[in-house]
Image 1 (cartoon, rainbow, N blue to C red):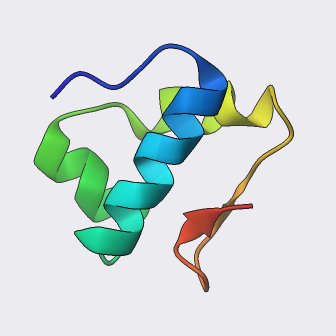
Image 2 (cartoon, rainbow, N blue to C red):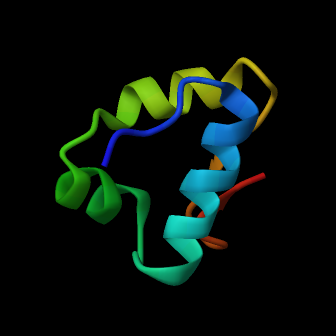
Amino acid sequence: MKLPNDPMILLSAVNTKLRDFYPSLDKMCEDMNVNKDVIIQKLSEIDYEYDETLNRFI
């Protein structure tokens, strides 16, 4: 699956996948073969960062 480019849609898609299917961002990126740093960078542009404890971007 290709992740969306729009940061707001990406945020929704990633948080949904983390909530429903993956115990961590690392596991999701590994399984989906996506670059974790790219996701973190795109979401930081809209002031979101990954919280490992909550397993979501906040």
